[in-house]
Figure 1 (tube, one colour):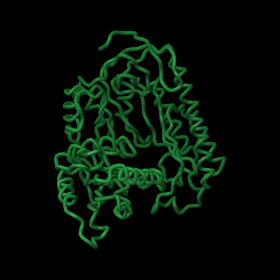
Figure 2 (figure 1 turned 180 degrees about the vertical axis):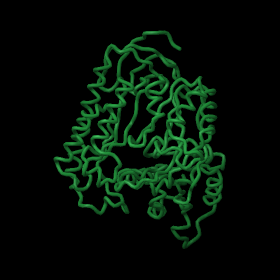
Figure 3 (figure 1 turned 90 degrees about the horizontal axis):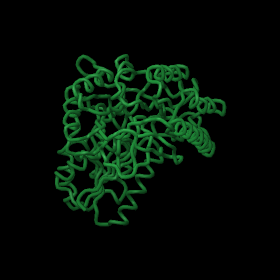
Figure 4 (figure 1 turned 60 degrees about the vertical axis):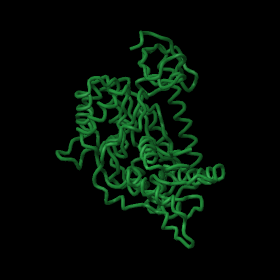
Length: 430
């Protein structure tokens, strides 16, 4: 083993792990496991700690380095674990010199009486103001789908969220650099590009001219005509600009699937979360998307059991799934994050939080089944991800057999197995 990356959390972390792997191996790390952690919930942090202990038991000779959002926000806690050899900050993990320094530090035998702080290589993430494009070498040629990070950090302060303190202020990759990166990726055979970020719809606010996400999307589609499919990972509805609405309505290469940061269906809870939209605005936004792209599939994040949420407030979140016609739901049982305002609010009991999360997940499953059934008879363009699975334009999984990964196939949906669509060929491969 040279370097192994264990990734927790979001797609952004998964994308960054590819860059980390390249830089760590270039720095000469060997027998090293890098944990790219997540801080979004207490459970995510606990899972990282459990994984660290398990990996050290299984491979006692391996060095363990922890990075990611939880490493940034709880560096001393991870450094205090005897299994951990080094803690690297969330911005630092993307820098080549960080891994060269880590190699030198790991090669030095620990000194008797050394302090926990000696393990920590974490800088002030709130001082980070600029963002460079990700390196391309982390992606193998021909992968069907590639995530391209165009934005990082967040300037908002939702009362439940620790992520701004793990990611720092909002910052963006200049449009020209994004376009060049995507052009190079497409030339290497990647059929679908996914734009990612922490607060993606805040893209460009600090760049010269303050371009918006819609302008970036238009530039990509205009300047890289050979790109087959472009996807946007998630949006905050209140920040969506007119150009993005235009692209959603007018360019079929932008996939008809969006994931929304909704969090709750109750106005008072949204206010206490310090969200910037109301229930009505969320419903109206989804209706507007359907007028522009009638077949669009929508997903959303919803938190169950936010502090002060009563049964009636929770029911409004349940009802929001139908009101917005959501297909995919990410349900988060509320987890107090130390240092956030919501952690100091009156809490809902743990058993009740878990019960509400189960009900929301059952509602989500019913919504997914409804969408799967509605797909029967439809012709869909399916990106083949592997020998056994593909995804439609709407990001619905499809059972696949005997196809070449990376190809896009026009297929007719003839049924579903409860989790994936089942299809038959309709048109030739292209």
